[in-house]
Image 1 (cartoon, rainbow, N blue to C red):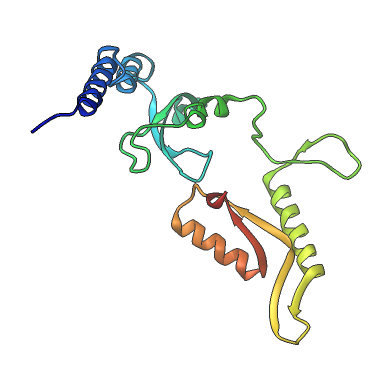
Image 2 (image 1 turned 120 degrees about the horizontal axis):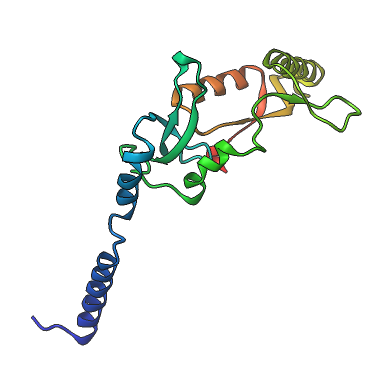
Length: 197
């Protein structure tokens, strides 16, 4: 079998690139880093598997926290890494997923419901009960005001088109199904999901 000059150059270049990457130590850099950190920093940490909150891919992450609920010690997240057993990402994370620890520790992160009253320029902290009651009341008022039972031809349509609903993608199929059924039961037509964006 004759080997052309072009085929020889392609094989040589591929071999050189593969051996260079291996010689520089990039083959198992992620595993080596995790193995180097784990014995010291994460030895007593609690390991929790979760999904990355950033996009529709829902990559698996392992969250390491330190603290004991039984002793009333507040848990603090120490380290976040990709889950090697997760079928979607197999332990890899994109730059946003790799920075999820900064998201958790950010001082600008909203940690509780807040409301801005009419005419005010400041947000005030409210309880979850107040927030949920307010959302339910505003939705009910808007639906009562803008609900369309029949179209111009007298056909029953039961539509509510003045409000929209934005769902998440990092949920189970069952939760997505229940969200869809709830939103459609109110007559909402404007339903969007993060998975399509």
